[in-house]
Image (tube, rainbow, N blue to C red; front, side):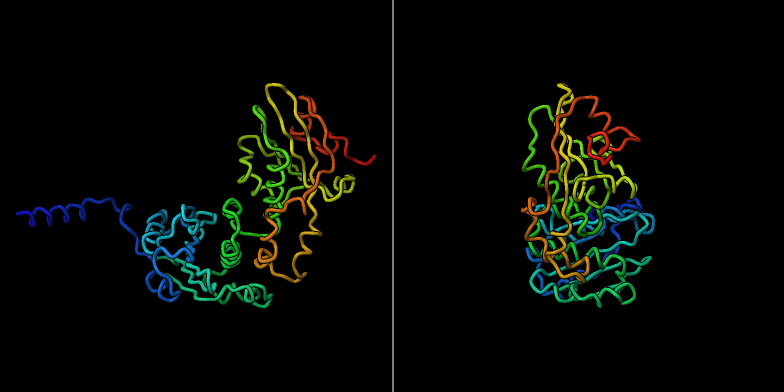
Length: 330
């Protein structure tokens, strides 16, 4: 009787379970683990995927993510389950990566089937410009390979978790997003907030740095914590500040007072850390050791007091923040 009831329950579940709830067929993860000589819960195994962001055949990919976690033991709390953002229509991608020898297995979902890439992402491989000339045609992962190689290399080199989260939002790792991370660490170290204060970042000129500033400082456009103001070539030429990177405004909305800081970022020093022809995906191999040394690249060009009138002038639409702060040539 007990066996009969169990069988009936199982049949009911198969009949009435919602179609969208059914576990999708995942990639051959056990074979990938064997290929990488990795065991479940291996701390040297990284899982990197766009699963939280993309959809496959009209459904989310969280079931595929769940299967990957079950098979590998990788978890966010262990620091070896990382994500990268992509548009919802982008193909699902998942990589298993071995820190020890930097071998990788990458699965890409094409319709209802799977494509598999097995390759080395060792430093000597990703540092070779010739490797990147054929990746789009040689590997099913194609467009995602740059993202996968750079973020996995940063993880293998011991990059801080907040840095890796910045690459998640930016969906890849490049010198631009690294500069934003260094600026954020500089701000936190030299301008810690006091009670009642908040940061407002004015990014001007604009480049990849904004995504790292949002993640590390929680300064987002939606919360009015980040204002992006692109500059024309003529406006840029009028700025006497060397290597301008924008402004930090430390503001107390109740007291209506604060301070403004004009920041600079020296890409000359930063790019001097690696050979001139180094592919972007490999630059992190040379720069990761300096992520805790923001003063090497970030400097203050001017610091000034803020009142409500100046704060409004610098943040409102249609104004040049350098002109409002008195930092333009006549």
